[in-house]
Length: 394
Image (cartoon, rainbow, N blue to C red):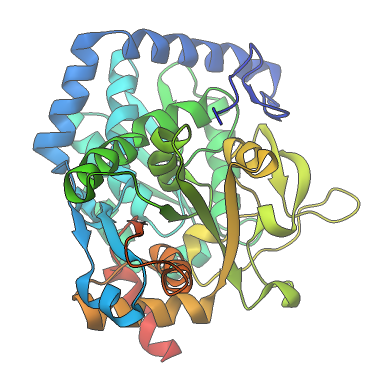
């Protein structure tokens, strides 16, 4: 099944759109025009490829998890190692692409939001490399949870803007970043962290992350001479998942997205907007989000700051509604157990977000045949998670 074509309103089926103040419509239209021109320009694409190769370190490897595969005794498990990118996550793919686009548009300033700080670090690094000034909005609660990444951003010359409104987490940081950008659109570029927001932002982010899936398809074929049986990726906003899923949408491959189950769906303390949410509008797009019967956003919870957000990207909403991608939930406890297991079995410390996908892969593997394969998108490394959180939960 092919992905839903975007119409002139920038929708994936009923999802997406541009639910923003009139003052931002012209800025979004200019962004779309600049992006389309850039992706039609071979010089821009060559520069992007060169930077991903020589600055970020792509292609990232597809690692066979032999010890883990032997333990579960079913499908062969492969890990797409986005944790080995420069700055430690898939976020750098999008940051490089968007900051190059910002320079092409003549912008001199960049604004971004961040939760765990990984997107902020990637944007700060790209801005430092390409000579743009950078402001990063981050909630006060996330500053407390991720001081190491805050320090990294400061060392990379980013200005940190603490956000003390709302719950002081990712949604609130995005609110403030949008508000700031709306008054500075002439010289400022908003580098959003994931495939959320008003059109054309979700498509831009997905396009810059699709390199993950393109590489995976080539690498898996060289390793196995066939397509993977299943691909599994964690889903918050959903950029790493879209990046690895997109090149496989027309292939006979099972695609599984994994949302944050928190303390368990039944407790209400989770961030699973596809699993339990309903259709609404947040940050400029129609999508699935956690809201009450009056349309008010309900609190979310996840051990991961990056998942502590009440909505999912509109393209994921379409893929869920259409049935092309299956979405599951994994609890904090299951994710932490998967993190500990893969560390001891393979010598890899994944991000908490990635551990959600690993936990689902472990459930799937033992039910599958020995000649089948699973690819897990290891979206980032977990040094920061371990430093701050792990021993409090063990």
